[in-house]
Image 1 (cartoon, rainbow, N blue to C red):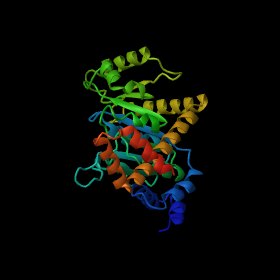
Image 2: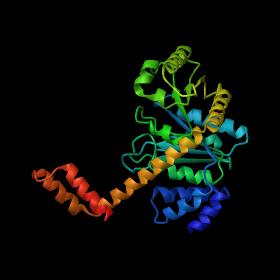
Image 3: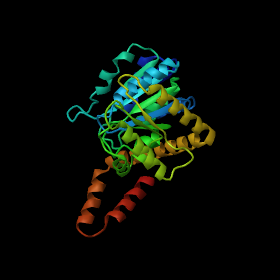
Image 4: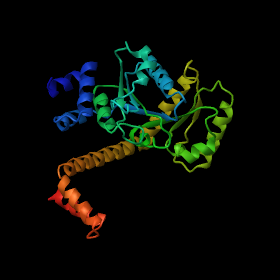
Length: 311
């Protein structure tokens, strides 16, 4: 199917067309620049929620509960579940599809698992472009669930409008959270599995650490939930919506999206440079040989290659 037809069908909310557009993005289709050019004009309305945290804190269960809560409020919801890549096939492991079966028949919910394909930061490299597709397709809320690999997940803070950091009792105190760097990326903190011992002390430690830190006008709330039973999920959605309103009123939403697009442009530029360098292996090898022979240095050779790329 041609891209014009796919775009028209995706804008009307047809799941198969949305899925095919995302596949074209992941496969780096030749007409991808044209597709993005047509989608950009109608994108920008969806609120992007990032869900991150260490493995075992209940990210998938919380994501599924958030989808249900937003659907109950009449919102159209997209989910991007970024899975670790299989070391054999390179594809997503699809673990999140198993946990979200209750939403599989809802035509107002679109769930897509994406392989990280070795990309660091907890997200897939194509996440910004896929977000643009879901945004243009009319989703009110898009939830991104990250891989769950710990300290490398700070990229979600640059991608989401509202970043949720999930913690669980017995998985580390507030000082450990500070050491991991997650206090800087969270807009809302969630102590999940709050029916376990230690939930109150974990929430108290996180609140204390947040109050000690230097933040802007927004002080992240700490919400206790039991996502498997739905306890605290409505309060969590209220906190997300409060942050959404603050983003709008303070002008931070526009600033964050400007930075996000800037990061996307830089990433695409670097991808283009890598593709160009891949077409000139002899020049790269010759440059490496000159450095090895002591005739040059890496900085000089890198500058020379960059000059060749711009001429």
